[in-house]
Image (cartoon, rainbow, N blue to C red):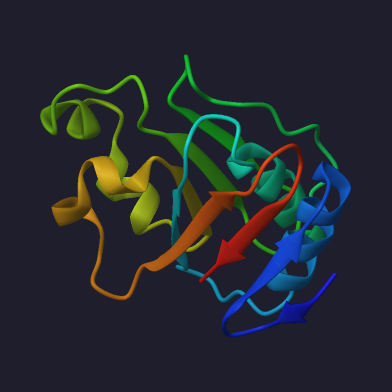
Length: 141
């Protein structure tokens, strides 16, 4: 595993993806917005599981594909895990209170964040997941 805090890492397993994210989370500040971009099965949810570990969240992290948002409290910062995959129109963000989450002072990790890029603050961090076959991934930020 090669970890460069400002550029990215290579992962060869879900465990490594979680480890990379847990290290990444140690330096996150309140109000950080992460836009997670990659194909289905690229490791976005595994990355969020690692963020939760790094933030000290003890609850099990699951995909919010059908609920749109999961909140994880009890860590150093609250983790808001969002998934835009099933959203079709930008106005749906207003229905789930998207802007309130952005302003809540936690860490927002948004799967498929590129679906509504104009709604993300300019200082959002893009995290890209590139699949190289089987479990090998490049994770870039």
